[in-house]
Length: 418
Image 1 (tube, rainbow, N blue to C red):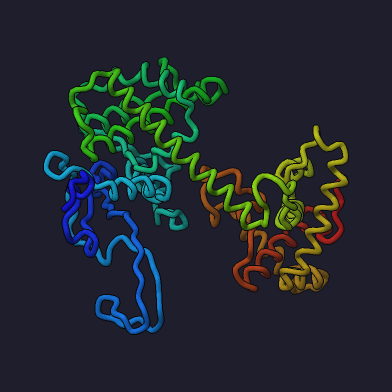
Image 2 (cartoon, rainbow, N blue to C red):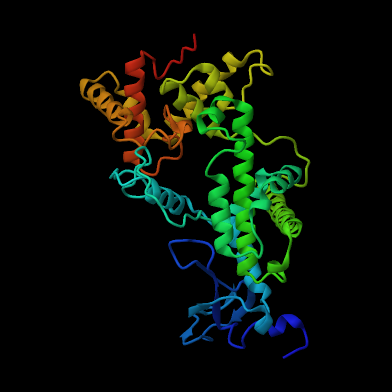
């Protein structure tokens, strides 16, 4: 064992069988989340050399943090063992990588509804019928991915909201106190306003969005600080807590920026560009196909132009450019999606005509589709656009588009934007 402090934060067998760290704050109705170490090292095997008890069939090189995971997870005890930086790395990766919509949906659905609606991702909770039951000790849900809210929070705005609200959090800090503080703080809009009043005034609506975003980020930051054994957290004043939260904001913002910069570099690599030179890359064909799809689904020309980046203020001839884009979309469809093109080629046949109307009626039936509050951005065909996975999907999407054109009197292969 070396004198390097980091060498004293993991057990001797962590390289082979990683321990798991429990973050108990994240998930009120579960035991929390478990993370393993992330400290990848290179391993190389020659042909016939063992990989544990299996021989490699050829030479191989790979990168691993561990061979297997231990079954039990432990909480942080910094005084006894410190905190292995490999866990910190995994936590940061989890903040950026996690997706928790289903858990969010289930949590709020469990507190507001008991109505069966099978098409929802939760498998049966319908938020359109609130049936709130009284909770003797109400607490909010806090998720580790809430720390990504840093991307949509400016530091001065976050600091301003914290100065106004952190006083409601009574030291010493515990997870339970933080969860109650978030729930109570965000139960009602600030300033004695009602929800309906906030929705009616754009300025108030935006202010409340900022407030909710800030408190949600702050709660996640404090919970993670507790779980990771933040030194002297229980002794901090409100100003000290605010400083900790702002430090988390700075740290996560830098992490997100570093990833974005790397993504930009990778995009240039994949497109064959070097550095920042080489000019603007060509628009993907998907842009024109999107224009075609939205036209057939009945969207207004100006809305379609906005979707594909043809701002009428910057493009005097936006309508002619849009028409060319739609016509190019037809060519792309014929090249890439032959089953879709076949449907439109036989659109005059009675069987295709009736199948198209039936497909469109089923698609537009609100009892079949997701509830209205999911996303208005997916209306009018937006949820169908993409790379069709199979030929049957090509045909089905084409029938829906054709049905829409029949209903609206639009010619699917000769766009008319007047």
